[in-house]
Image 1 (cartoon, rainbow, N blue to C red):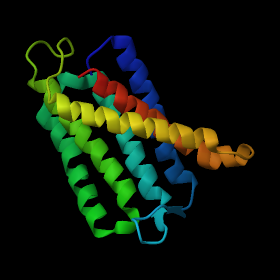
Image 2 (image 1 turned 90 degrees about the horizontal axis):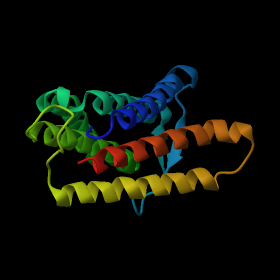
Image 3 (image 1 turned 180 degrees about the vertical axis):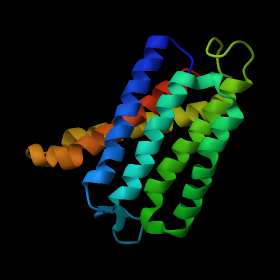
Image 4 (image 1 turned 120 degrees about the vertical axis):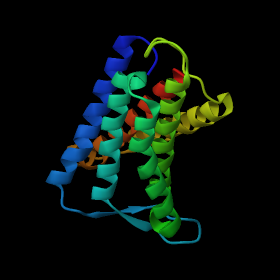
Length: 191
């Protein structure tokens, strides 16, 4: 990531904490299905929380690593880290319409990370001390997507009601999704 070192480290701490929380949910909670909106015309779908927690945990740690290491790691390495999961998520989304939106969101995130990594390493100069290059249109589209996602997930977090148990079961995962959406938006702003 390009920008002040303090911002990079704060982003790394935020996304690593979110990723750690998501991965810790794998150990604690049994694999329970959660009702999620499905494709138009189909009834609500079911998404297993382990799948969501694993994807979000790995994305959080990947974002933390990229925020700190950034251009010091060759873009091809980052492409091999994020590219195959993105392709698998896209294929899985095409196969299963009941889980499509969730998988597509994670595929967009993985593809955005691949795009940022390749753009960072394509720019001339020293690692961490040059602006990233890339397509302004694609960067703008990704900024709009993740900005909109952060606003949407933030509104869902604020609209949640209930006691402490409701916040712990729904609020913390939503807060993690919100922090990762904001983190992705911040990383894209540096391009």
